[in-house]
Image (cartoon, rainbow, N blue to C red; front, side, top):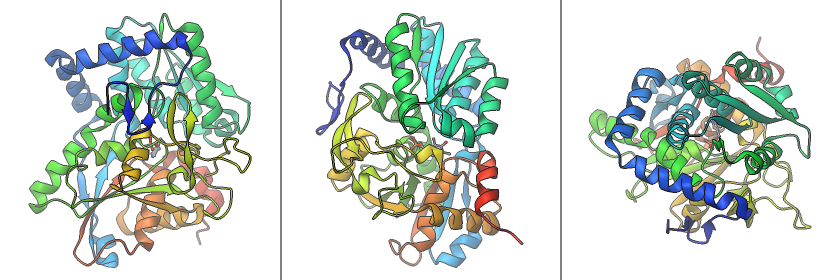
Length: 390
Ligand SMILES: *Cc1c(COP(=O)(O)O)cnc(C)c1O
């Protein structure tokens, strides 16, 4: 990344001028804090005593037997609040505190980032407003209630596709109005500089731990690391420790909805073109007329037409192996790992499992780490409607 936040042509800061000084402040504060031992100590203590880190690396024995290669699960589902999102929410809340902000806003899709942000705000006594598309409010009712129980205000956004894209637009609008006292906690490696690199750094603990754990357990690097991709924060979190290890295949699994050949998917790395959305240049979904396309995925956390700029860059550098899994494949993956390993993954993560079940990317005795970005509790009503059990 260069000093303007570009990864190759991607990234940057395409925002109204009103936000420039806020983003500069954020970058400067963050860079300073990152090097401050007391900040690092405070953050690490929270990760240990509150989040429950380090998360385990679990050998998936029955799944490995079936696949013929060896699969380890990095258990972000065991974090407090049930996904990797809490790592970033706490990191950014600490930064906001040091900047003297008193109010926090955030966008959310599946509600996991909203819950993580509401949790961090409760812990530190902050006012918290969460923007969420009205469609997502409907399909993620459990998380909406959790956010409210934690003391947050949830604003239902009724525009456009009524999902994450519009929720993000509304959050940016709020920030423009209230930038003096408000910090916007973006939930993925997207948005204007410095968010993509800052969020990646807060999530990089996933890869740092996983690398240490696999080296201790097996004495060598894995052959592959697999993660699902919405905006890309759990993927960048686990990939970043391995980007320089070129023998390690980094597999990004997007949601291909009803199929890559339809217009109903959420796969900008597979099918998108570079363009600007929410302050940064990245791969995006476009219609034939050049409009930003609505994304479709069974999982609200993948239902976004853009993807992080660094992942866009790694794809163009051919460092990334880009794959996709349909809604149907994700449902199969979910049931498969639930019954083979006793781990019920989030629908987002289920795309990675569905991919793994079908893939020919690995050979016998390869070692593969799959990042279990979250647990499936929030998805029970969707699963009940879609997976028939005797
Ligand atoms: C939010 C979420 C995702 C997608 O977001 P990324 O930024 O791509 O990680 C994936 N899995 C879970 C469990 C989530 O909550």
